[in-house]
Length: 69
Image 1: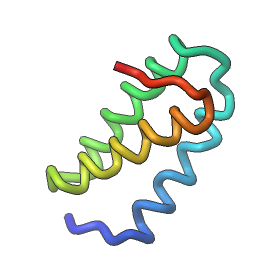
Image 2: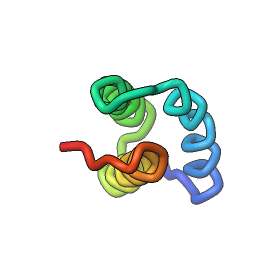
Image 3: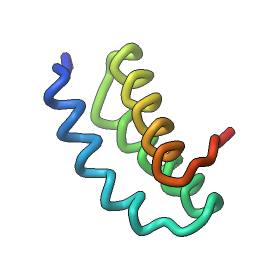
């Protein structure tokens, strides 16, 4: 399924609230893995999956000033 930039923005907006509830790195890591699974279930194009995962990682970095493995 092809995804345009607006669809990606909407998806990221829907997960921002989930990350707002995180208070530490461990919780953010667990939530990131859940969101990654959701991305992989909803999308089948590797380019889209990688782009969304990168946006999730950037969101975590921005919100918590931490880089995850």
